[in-house]
Image 1 (cartoon, helix red, strand yellow):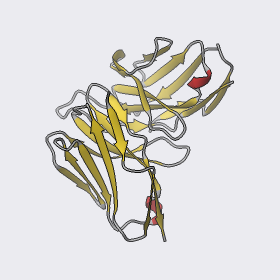
Image 2: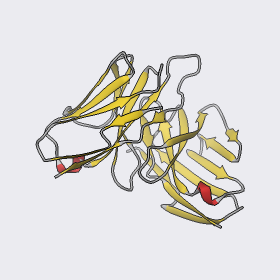
Image 3: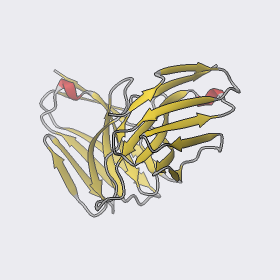
Length: 109
Length: 114
């Protein structure tokens, strides 16, 4: 069956460090992958989209990679700030959209 | 932006509920998701230009409508306790040169079934 796994339920890092979040999937061939940020009690907010023929995308302090051979995406936040603390969701798209359970990131000052 | 109503709703088992969503202006696609506590959103279905365009693993008692005026509805019949969740709608503009575009989510409707 299709599975999407995000590396850990929670990740704690120090301000200024790079946060790296992992999204692995099995039995699925997505046409694209998206990363979202979700704050408590709110809907997800789109961050980045990467298509199956792209290896890497950047936006300001964010970088996402997509390896269709490894079936993995890495999401990096450089120079992390306490305001980056949130839950980050990966979502695989094609005929439908499938989300991982999310990783709760806490950036400590 | 995308708005949803109501914000919160309490129903009893067996009742029916209608949730509403107002898409971002000009968007032709709306998707609905169910998000249980501590989980990622689960895809219910998508509407593109007022036609259902894909459906997740949800029973037929979950149905929807999309209207030409950027509004849409999610209807759930015969509510069950497990239907308690945050229901999210998301709109996007599809069908252009570049396939698959970002979705803009609403704040959600928190449904509690007693």
